Length: 116
Length: 112
Image (cartoon, rainbow over all chains, first blue to last red; front, side, top):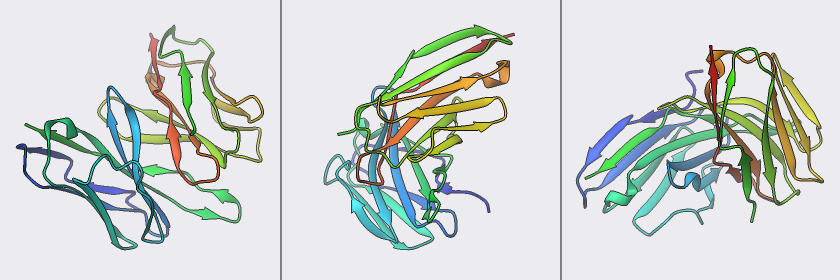
């Protein structure tokens, strides 16, 4: 498996523009998580899905943020309109849970967002 | 709400030293605890996963222990090498949910 795939790897945009980040989880994983990492706040969970259904979006900072998972192999995180304080690295991660317990949480390489 | 603390924030050691990284958490009702490594500008790589029913896990020179009752985990690195230099993060599930809460990490530097 190619692992968790995120795109774009780097995005530079101007304040007010729409940003869409994409994620392809590992095949067979039924949990998908979106995290944001900054120097000040560390890694923060934004939202997570189970079987394509959003379970907890309490970490989404504002209504400007939205996430979807239309099928088991694709998820998007959208910011509209973007603001400079949204600048961060956004990670997607996936895992599964079986009878033996939880699997390893596998992260993508991240999308570095800079909002000017 | 689960809170995860890692001490120290940074650690510098000479090559060959054995070392211990600490992780503490406030809610003992966890599903699992995971240790990750992050190299500068990179994503996170899983090192060890401890299920709630387990006390420790080992992989090569790494050993992680879990004491749920005291809310602590330690990551032991034997015979450290310069290639071990990275930030090590501890993540713990939040009680009753699948959410993983991360500590701020310990930045390790192993000097040749």
